[in-house]
Length: 95
Image 1 (cartoon, rainbow, N blue to C red):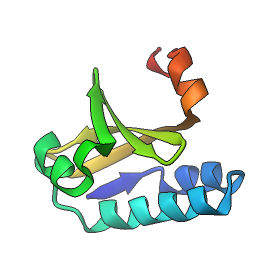
Image 2: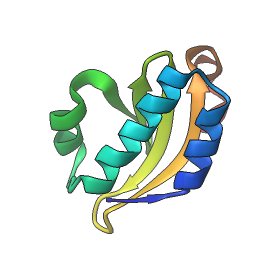
Image 3: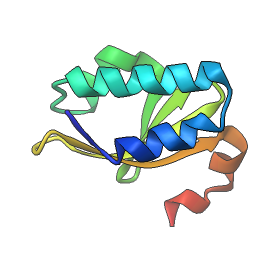
Image 4: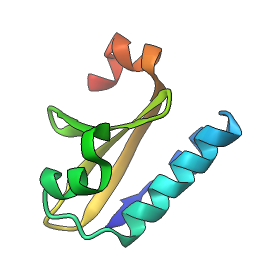
């Protein structure tokens, strides 16, 4: 898969704890080597750590939610947000 705005996700993670940074970088590496065709393929990799919310896919990474949009046909994942659970629960990211 091709990750669009990888630099943004890495920059957003830099202000967080080292364990979150490491997890986000690991997620980026998995995405780079993935060949996902649908949500079920992602769940084979991430099990219950990913949910679909409208057009978004939401990955649960420790105490954060990594939100993306995925175009399976084009093999592209667009990074949108990296939010704490509290920020995520406010729902403003859905707008």
